[in-house]
Length: 439
Image (cartoon, rainbow, N blue to C red; front, side, top):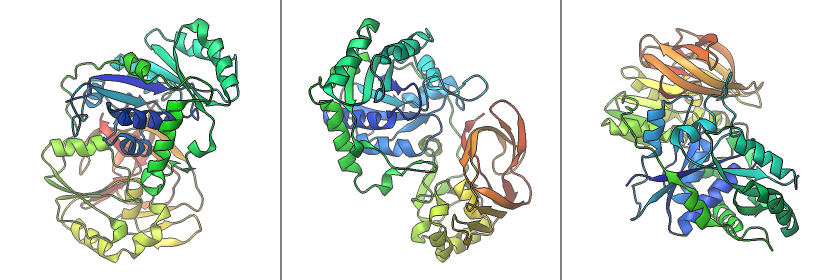
């Protein structure tokens, strides 16, 4: 069974609490017996794992910049069937940044694009912690800005008291938009972060308790105010469009070994799904546990946090030796963190250099951090990643040395030509870009 209806949670800006509200809603719906799954707008690896924990179903990324409309529709309707019970399924999409914020120059890839392309209603999550009557012009402005984007309801977040909730609800009454609920301001619902986003779901020992607390807080609402109207939210969801022909990414080999642990956590679920759909057998292994590279025709080292585990990676002699042996005859591909591990050395934030695999002429450092962020158009004329790709770059590493043949020609979202990205040597290739889809 595929997901048949959907709704989008968006906000006026980043920091409004969309992720907390989304997780609370997913857990609450699952607790109430609704067949539900989450999706995440844009290039995000961390939030989807929280979605998966909240409702026990894989969360896919929907990227209106990097994917075609047909591809987005196909992914939106995919994957809800595993383990789902009878009845209709609901897709809850968590937006990124503000509702209309996207890539330069024109905001392409914004959550609003998903709302238009999928014809789904938007529930606006508003951080009301520092406002009262001013909530009305804010919501009215977003609701009226684009006739192709239908704001269908409001969730108030960080509400201080029942009196505060009444003031907000009264101010919003003339707009005719339902206020579905008011989530109280609570310190125990804050989510810890680090330099690439939230601390990963797998690193939180209290995750289940947090999800249950968030669901309870959303359901009950602000003490003295109304409880959350879950039935009204489900009723607002509308049907997903019929998915047409949208081919995925062709599997690079029959047997693929994928590194997966806290240092190598950033692999897009839709990428692995495409490979499996193409007949590939995927075996997961953990470099941090010093697993040897499994027997495979292709090794994929995804991004993650190698800088936080550089000492353990350097000490994982079985993993490194087997990776070097594999690379003598068969392909190895690394993205961002995986790319850095393929290099000769990685300098951590304290200035200690750790020896890496030495398969590429690359030295990177986190002692002096510099943010690199943005969508990328990529082109490889030959070799492992031959073709045109849409990707994204987000890291704080500084490149100290990059010697060898470049992997990609690169352009930013505005079409400006950038320096070539990545390296290739023999059977080994990698870059700081995360490939999202075929361009």
